[in-house]
Amino acid sequence: MILIIILDGVDGFIARKRGEISVFSSVFDIAVDRVVENVLWIVLADLDMVPVWVAIVFIARSLLVDSLRGQGIGRGETPFGMLQSPLGRFLVAGRFMRGFYGAIKAITFAWLLLLQPMPTLAPQGWSEASSWLGVVSAVLSHLSVITCLVRAVPVLIEFALSEPTTRAQSKQ
Image 1 (cartoon, rainbow, N blue to C red):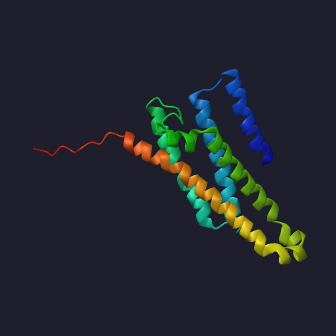
Image 2: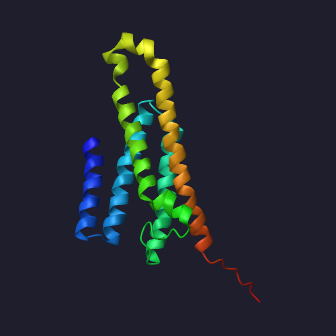
């Protein structure tokens, strides 16, 4: 998991430095990120490390947001270029928020996956610390969900506002 996260950052850095960024590469990068992320949430839900609703939120958000991004690409926009408002650009496309979101998910995944074998490996320590370890797990999971939803809202709103409305013509 750590290697995947590091390589994801390295490939983007190299592409930007070499000027080899394309719509395909950015869409493919986002798609691969979503596959890895959604698989991890599903595995964590299956292991009872997070409630199943957490995995559902991430899957639904990725389907909705990435589908809308695809519509923007069809109109000639880049995945992050469809955002027009300064707040939308900050929350979704800004380097700080992208880094924060990636970091909070990476910390959450690492924490939960490292915590998962503890009841078997250290039953005594687990029984003594499981309640506060569970609180940390819940805080990290909820922070990940909140950040996920906060970053989805501008995409949904700006896409809805950018779509022209049509009225059905009544048959005469």
